[in-house]
Image 1 (tube, rainbow, N blue to C red):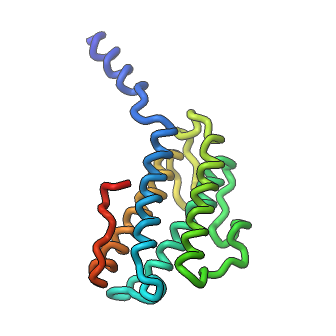
Image 2 (cartoon, one colour):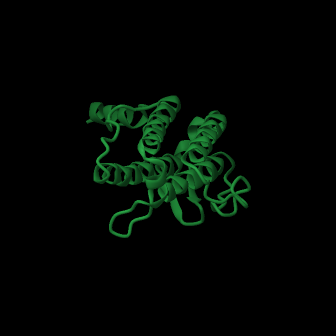
Length: 172
């Protein structure tokens, strides 16, 4: 019995993934989503939808609006809504896909800047993100990634409906 307790305690304290690996995983998804944005024809990016879903431009902007206030919230503990975050005040939907891609790249740099400021033990801390989601920090980060994957899937459906082969989902 003592041996199984030691084994169980060893399993619970073993790190499965490093902070750097988690960042690389998230940035891999962001890189793939960027390629989905690039695959859209300019006009269809802003107007095409199926079944009343939002355009991929709208979905991409949701991802942008979540990522910067999200990573800032993780680091600072201040969870501003996307509308309240200073980086987005007065920023309308960009007029071109190229401008969305530039904004996407700026967000990527912001994530890379803030990420090293997250202490390892903070990933286990529980916080209420954006005043509504109470989870450990690692779970909130997974939510950011999962939300992006979900919306990128919608983009894949749009691209296929437009007769465009989307990037391979496993090439991150």
